[in-house]
View 1 (cartoon, one colour):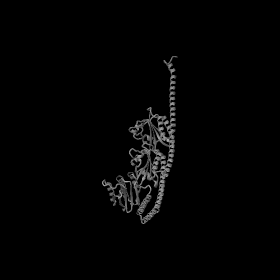
View 2 (cartoon, rainbow, N blue to C red):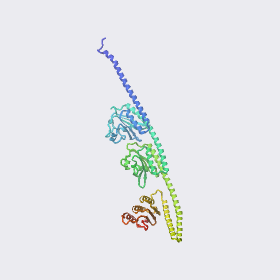
View 3 (tube, one colour):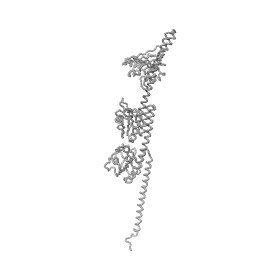
View 4 (tube, helix red, strand yellow):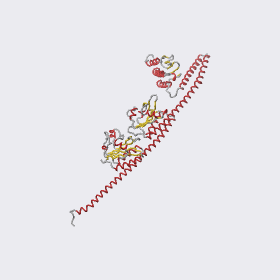
Length: 570
């Protein structure tokens, strides 16, 4: 039979070959797809192992978003952490966005628009074009262009921890079902890794809390300096919460202010000594109510506190230092803007730490009060013994010597006895001055202690230590305004001796009776005939302003005597 058409035989022979080529091409495509699936599964397994091997939460979050971006072949990726109320983003970690682009954007999203869809409805979301979705609010100025989108929630047990956001498929296409499946699988493994990291972090925090609580209690009850204890308190508070900075502010009720007495971390030196009004809306509220406050954004509170320029505040946590009548102030920890917010666990640990620290502070205060009382009782006993025994015996000895002096016929013997009586009288006065000093509360900045401080300071310029004798109830009888004048006069008088007298001895004697009488004597060159008198006029003016007087004269045996008097009647 003749062929149906020319070349029909060749066509029938080529048809099986074409079918074979198609089958081979299909097989090759399927092999490549299987190889790509295998590679993707391997990549997913490697990513799961990578994020599961890390226990630091911040590192875990970075590894998750990096792995998701690689697996989905996305140009940009982000992981948004949702707050504990499930309403907004409190942390935003990105991949693919440079520092310049971050600076141009100005701030991270809070979880509105497209990003808010996953917060309100935590299910995977794929979009071919972000701009076409009705919830889209557009991109802010300076934001890199983004069109395709894939969002997947991350769950930790039954809680939505955050969301993975991926944009801009590298090949210019759209994210497909396989991308969604792979990223969803990664998100499931990420939830387990995040839970492990949080448990590990919680365990570390509890360990630091136990160590810090024991350290603070030991330091306080062992008598460590209170300023060192407060500094330790701030340092441990920052470490417990992994905060950028911490501050301990104690309440000064008379001044109606908080005073930052210890700080640690970023710009701690700028925080020290800072004063906040006692009615500050955050610190004052915590102090009065005893309820802690957590702020996702502390910029407004920082402005109210008049923080130094350049010291920015992001998330803040403020807890009371003591409750009710035992409230002493507040402890504040904070992070820089964009830093992580403080969790419930961090708040509970800091509250417990502050509560124990407040108890330890109160116990230490009570112990110091008891020690101070015991010291006062001991000093009072010593003062009574000196007054009732030593002074009486010295007085009796002086009376005996005076009687013996009257019976002595030898002039030289009589003079020696009189000098011994004068020495005993001086000794009695010095002991009485010591008795008054013993009755001063230790650690109290009294007039007596201020006078001794002036004398000690003058010794450096004089070249010797002046003798100081204070006789009478100096700290209880002398009014404050008279005491201020007295301090200025003593300081000026000793300065004059150091500058002009060329003396080798100087004596400061203050006697309290109806008047306050100050005597400053030296063995120097006496009053110069010429020279400035402005300092002496100031001393005289101070006496006259108080209704008193001042005299200055050269002693018969050389040197100068300054006699300054002020009445003590109100």
